[in-house]
Image (cartoon, rainbow, N blue to C red; front, side, top):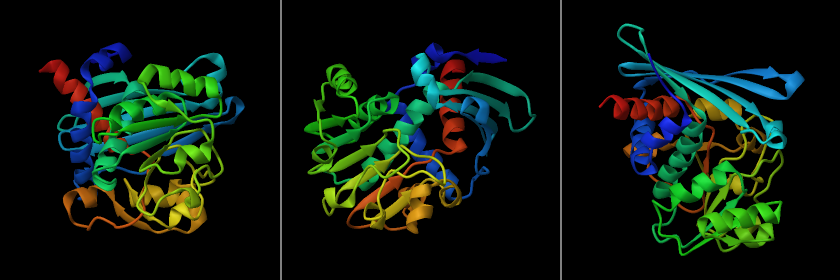
Length: 297
């Protein structure tokens, strides 16, 4: 059985290829072609960790991502997310490949936001605001540059030095005040670690678009109720109604799944729009399949 470490995965994966793969898997998921339960979580309270299991059956491949989230790893200089993805033959059950899943998680998350941004933001979107300075901040800047021709990209973080590091690395503009970063932006990306609302509706324009990527869990929020009055788009209705504190606590309804909008079975919404990201196993399996197919081609 093959095994790919993170550097091997990095050499086989690009946003240019991954974004269209995510478009196709989202359509298959929403049309019922993929079998996938909502993720299972096991808490590791003695170490403030979370162990997640995300399986999916997609055509001739079965896959599962095992992901561990340890927020305190930041202080240790380690990634907060560690993961392994395993693929099997759906015909025989034979194991095909295992691979490091940390980079796949990073890239497929931003790639799906790229799909959503291309679909839901204004075609002439000029200003992008990224709230947060970690791995997903950098990943989203790289991915979203491929789907919109932004004239200005802003980055805000609680630690100005970290924002400056992102700015120097990727050629973007540092914003010292959160509200100033959001106001006037056509696209907002929320990727800062939070438990309470970070983005306020009063700061957003009437046709602004938000990628809300920062929170997972029924008790956590990143958007206030005014933002949640927008048209809410998700990957999976079932997952959103279990795992999104923004939806559950605000009482907001889900307008559509991304796959429904991509397939044209639901019309695109008007006005302010929000993609509430949670991540689904089908995305990880499709990304791992892309890596595997390129390796054995």
